[in-house]
Image 1 (tube, rainbow, N blue to C red):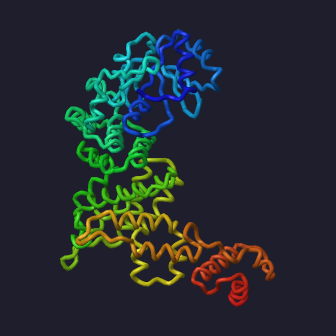
Image 2 (tube, rainbow, N blue to C red):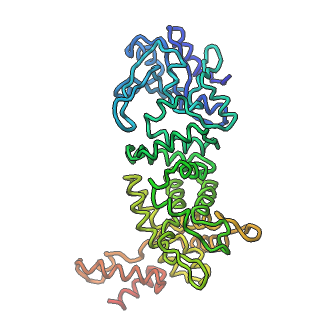
Image 3 (cartoon, one colour):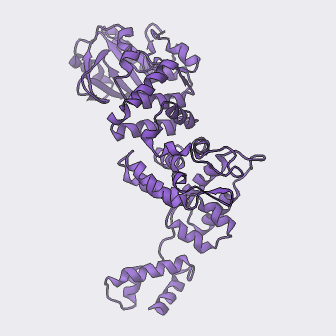
Length: 457
């Protein structure tokens, strides 16, 4: 059984006392078998006579929110949980795409029939908290134990194209293998253009779950390839046919390296979704320029300027995925400069070069990406214990105070005014030259900056 806190049981018993049968469904029940903690609960309610009567019963427990255009879902924050009270319902396809459904509230529906609308058997498990027993008409508990991802109903699964991407993130999060029927369905859906029916916002949300909630996102990406879906996310499909120099990349293609780097980055996630999403997407796309730049010179494979070329390719790819411009603008510099930590280390770079780089990219993020890039590969000998160039750059950037942001300009417009200059358009050019001189360490203090300014003027 699922151990529920007394506060939650009080709510459940309150509903039961008034003739409503509450059943826990969805991810909360599934996660009780996988040791994944969640505070989001879906409770399916049987025996509800009207939405108004349900609101009356729930109102003493807190403020309610109502959403859902075609059916009523009540949301309640209570006892540390975010609870959705949902009606048993059936769905029928009425249009194209992810939202093309007609939904019917059928409070007297039996659980097996209500659960048939769900995507995967692992999500169709219910729990009766009053009688303390699981309801599993489609053998989801057995599939979860066998590490198997199975659809509930092949006839209705194909109605919702989003389920293809949901399959990827569930397979990765719980390390599941698609059964043959599900794999065949997804291949057929992709071949018929199902992914084209999805808005980018929905695609992004599934990618977010894949990249942020799974220990091995590579499982989902390999499944996407197996389903024939990489071409929809082109040029990811070109990575597999792009070779790399075996001495530095014994793992083979750029695709193999990218997946290894992706899993390495997953192990370094920090727990803040925007920061983690920046780094995960940067890792996925860091070598996206290699298919267009890889050449063989004197028998050696190389991809000169693949960071610079990848910058623009990644911009187009990301714009097709999300409207979050701030996220995109944080990712792109990481792709462009991902090879620079090793480049600067090998050239024994001066402090001024590090200062200049800090104005283009967050060095802490860059070092993290470069570390995933470095360890996300096979090694001819034993795996190195440290990423030397990353540790070197981290220490240098920290000592310069530019690990997270560039140095603030020492000289401002007020300093020009203090010297008797009248504000004009020339101020911008003068201050840009001053800041460049500061980065070149021609002066390192405010007093030295004032002296430089007088000399310069």
